[in-house]
Structure formats: C-alpha cells, structure tokens
Length: 112
Image (tube, rainbow, N blue to C red; front, side, top):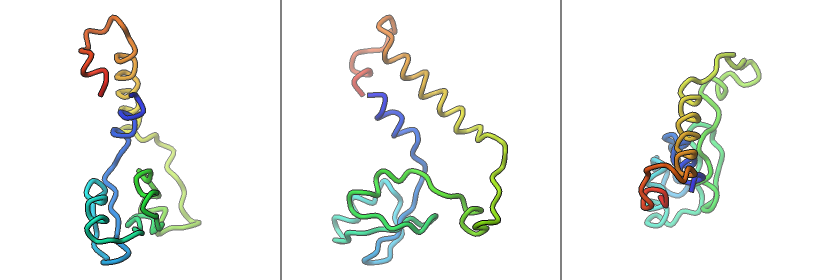
C-alpha cells in the first residue's frame, strides 16, 4: 500500500520517444500509445536510454540536463533537493497514518 504511494509520489514527468514512429509521449500516456502504435521500444528524452515494453514504467528519474551535456566535467551541487526532502517527509507521514490503528482514516482510504 505504501509502495503505491511512494511510486506515485516519486514520479516526475518523464518523456519518451517511440522508436517506431518517433512521437514524443508523456509517461502517463505511453502505454496507450505503445498499444496503438505497436512499438516494442522507447527511449528517454533526458538520458537517451532505450527501454523495452516491460522496462519503461520503472524509469522515474534520470540524469539532469547538466549531467548529460557536461559529461565527466559535471560536478554535483552540494545542496539537498528541498522538494525531494519535503516529498519524502510527506510520504513517510502518510505511511505512518496508514499504519496507525488510532488514525481516523477511513478503511477505504487505507486500501488505496
């Protein structure tokens, strides 16, 4: 249950290019596109990695544009990604609320 929330919350908008028709498709619409197009492979726009039909769903983040174009010269910033820290804290709090039997969360909400 918590893994569904973590997966949903960790998704960022990833774009893929269909290897058959070269159309650029957002991740939420990719499964439908692949079914209608008949393609078996897509590539990530950001990192250019090629994924098979059963692999693309797990690709939620990849290298930054700076990493891509600077290559070996790239030096990561020391600052922490504040958005990711907030997101992780939120996911942790939701998980605690789901597991807490004294929480006033409805049983229907717990099963999401």
